[in-house]
Image 1 (tube, rainbow, N blue to C red):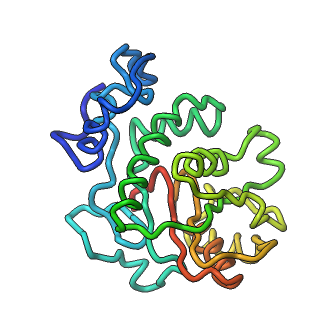
Image 2 (cartoon, helix red, strand yellow; image 1 turned 90 degrees about the vertical axis):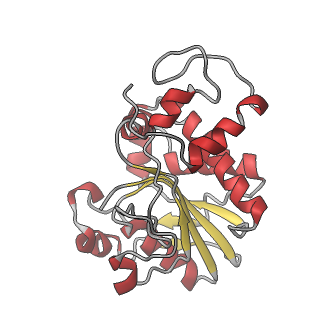
Amino acid sequence: MNQMIKGLNWLSTFMEQKVNSVKQGGLCVACLSSNAFNGLCQPCRRDLPVNRWHCRCCALPLAFPSPDLLCGDCLKFPPPFRTSCIPWRYQYPLDGMIGRYKYNGQRKFARPLIADFAGVLEQKLDSGKTPRPDILVPAPMDSRRRRERGFNQAQDIAEHLGRDLGIPVEAGLVRRIRRVRAQRELNREARLENLRGVFEVTAEVPERVAIVDDVVTTGATVRVLASALREAGAQDIQVWALARTPG
């Protein structure tokens, strides 16, 4: 792999500090190197496109340093969630890893990402930079699509994060009450309209909630889901996802 990120960044620096404390062994899922931990060798881990500069609310990747900036969309249409933790951009080679996990059921390609994500979240929670959610809510999946795919990747990610971080997962708290068109075919406005009224909250919602998904694209799904949770009583809503598509 050609390195896509030169030098060290906050994520690779953090993970390099964990090398000696993580059980090593096995092959790198990307290049088959035997010098891997958590399923990736360090050169391949440094190739992952870190979402270094981004909107502080929705984590949309930006082209310049932005520790306190909001993107135009969040300024014009403030979302119903407070902040997002999304460590990578949905670009090569991470997009291929997530694709093989999501569409082909090859979970080995997601395990390194989920393990590293859990480490980043643990650091943020322990430092107080991120309030600890009371529960994790995976983005619900259409029942037919779940049968076709065999699993809901958002629930799979949430269950791993929940075990690592000691946070309960409430996979049945929100359900889809109608089918919608495939979101990949639609722009932002059409996605929001397509999802209007699609989610139903089935039980009491605690004050602090983190929505978990694999990839955030336009943000339409998490906006509508967060709105449903807020209407049901959630006061502090975060979005946790592996990757964010560039604007």
